[in-house]
Image (cartoon, rainbow, N blue to C red; front, side, top):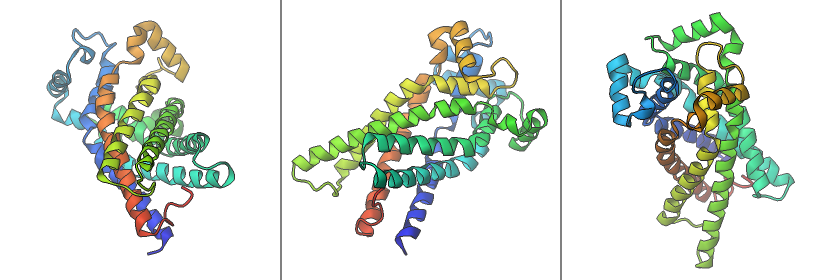
Length: 301
């Protein structure tokens, strides 16, 4: 098998890995959307004041057990191509930038992550729009019925509602990758002081990469979380929320700072373990393939 074939196999593998890792947090995503939706709906006890277990019970009692898995179909369809597109674009952009400017600098990581986020958001936004709409819709509709209803009402443009918020969310990915690459570089440098070659890995390294992934994702999520609230509101039915900044301003004026950070705790519980495992697995796959192909696999990426 050639290096080129191995690279494409690697990217498909990474996309599939993301798909499987994402399924475990579907109920938390549903809960997070419910928190953002119900918190302003006038319920006596909204999910924002409930514990996770209480909210799950509330969803089951009001909408049935199937409601916990709303949007699962579009998520399965969307995660693998989304992550495959992201990592393919990221690695190619990084390779091109490393050949034209000082390699592996923060500007390289920032630019590559921005390009990857932009391409991925643009190509997969309709999938995430349908998934979010299914999670917010109290009716029992299928993904196909939801797609038909959106198209009948708004046409193709309807599937890109909230894409501005998704673009703003690229900042989260950028912060995450820049921080992660920085922490990773420091960890490798610290290991080299102990006489360990920079291209060697031990189980300890992958545990440290998990910590680096968790730390960088926590910081990035806390900084960029308001875009998640805005994106969810923009994807609801109705015309109250029309533009990104208008949505954030409306939420801030009506609900205060708690409104723009509502659901953050659940987001962190959902994202941090997932990201930690994901980044460690990513590094393990890269290391194994790099070692197998005598360092030619990941050259300049």
